[in-house]
Each structure stands twice: as C-alpha cells, then as structure tokens.
Image 1 (tube, rainbow, N blue to C red):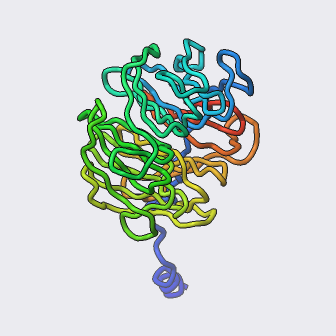
Image 2 (image 1 turned 30 degrees about the horizontal axis):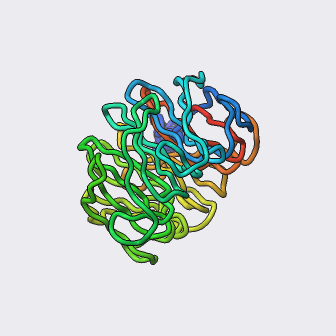
Length: 309
C-alpha cells in the first residue's frame, strides 16, 4: 500500500499555486456624456453639422453646414453665439464643412462651396480670407477639412483637388502634396485632417477608405485601413482628431461609428451604431478632442453634437 501511494504521488502533477494570466480586457470605449441640437434654423439648432472644433478655453465651435453658419457653444452644449449665413461676402458662407481654432483663439473656417478659407476672432469678427476656385497652388476645389498646428501652420484638405495645402496664418502658401490616386501619398477625395502635438498630419483618404499619416512637410509616415466593416477598416472615413496622448479618432461615416487608433494605426476601440439614441450615430462626420479626454462628434444626419469621455 505504501508503494502504491508513493507511485500515485509521483504520477499526479503538483498543483501550482500561481494563477494563470487572465485574458486582457479590451480597452473601454469613451462613454456618452451629453448631446445637443436638433433640426432647425434657430439659435442652437443644427442642420447637417459636418465639423466641430474645441478652443483653448473649452468653447466648442460647430460648422452648421446646412445653415451656412458657425455656432459656438460651451463645453456642455450651452448656446453662446453664431455668425454667418448663405452668401459670398466677407463673413458669409456657402455650406462650410470644417472649423479649427488656433492657440490664440482665432477661428478658421473651410468655406467649402465658396472655395476659400475665412478667419475670424473667437466672437465671429471677420479678419481675413484667402483662396478661390481652381487647381493652381493656393486655390481650392471644395476644401473640406482644416487644422492649425502649434507652429502656426494652417493645413487644408483640398478635397476635389485630392491634395493637402499648407499655409501661414495669413494665407501664404508654404507647400502642398498629394494628387489623385491610390498609391502612397496620393488621395481620393480627402475629407478629414488633423495635426497632433508633435506635428504629425493625419488625413482621411476617404474614397480610398484609409488614413494616411505624414510629417508636417508632407513626407509619408504610415497608412492604415481598407474598405470593410471590421476593426480598423472603413466605409468612408471622414473627420479625424488626435489627442494629447497620441491617439487618433476617425469618424467612420457610412458605418455610423467612431474608431480609435494609436498614432501608428493599431486599432484600440470603437463605439456607435446606426440610430438616434444616446451614443448612436447617423452619418457622423466631424470629430474633435477637448480637455480631460472629452471627444465631440458631429452627428450630422441626426442634426446634433454628442460628447463622450
């Protein structure tokens, strides 16, 4: 009997006291915080808002595209002011699709169907403009996205010219890159653009269903995406934003979601489905990052802005 017990002890493996490593939980997507807006033309109402930007003081500017105006809200959606209406004169707009704010609080508007950029102070006082319809350097053919970096350079996604143009704050052309195609550094209808804190430029190459990243001088860095509904794929990538930690957010318009990536394109998280409920989207287009990790999404066909954290 003793020999049997010894043999049994040798045959039965020792039980480890170490717990096996638990599977790592996927990162939690940002959670819904607030929303504002509904269809209309009155103050605080929205009609197909395509762009959103956050000022250094936390104010939220919305390109109210269907109403051809810019509206300003506090960080929780409280209406503050507005300016512009349909027209071609200084301070007027024709379906502006994007808005950006520089470090001094000046507001830059991609006046898309007037083929120009207009600049205002934070209260809507007209300051300057540049651009006209065309394909020559400094001209635009439906500019659809705009961003200003910490060095005072203005980046514009010149959509139907399939390029990015870079200007000084007063509109002097510095450089351009792109051209129509599907190759590295080429674009097919770029609709979104963002610059991170180290000067990397992210462009939503919409009809190529990808995001491309460049240095501030236009040197290609990396690209990711592909058409489809899987994680990291797109069906019409539109707005792009980058946060202070180097994460990149992309409004995946036809799939009614927002995707989050590392700066090199590794998928992190996603949120949103088709619908009108909190945290749902119907054709999201613009995305912006504010302080304390807040994310604002222009939920265009739901005629509202949603805030997440």
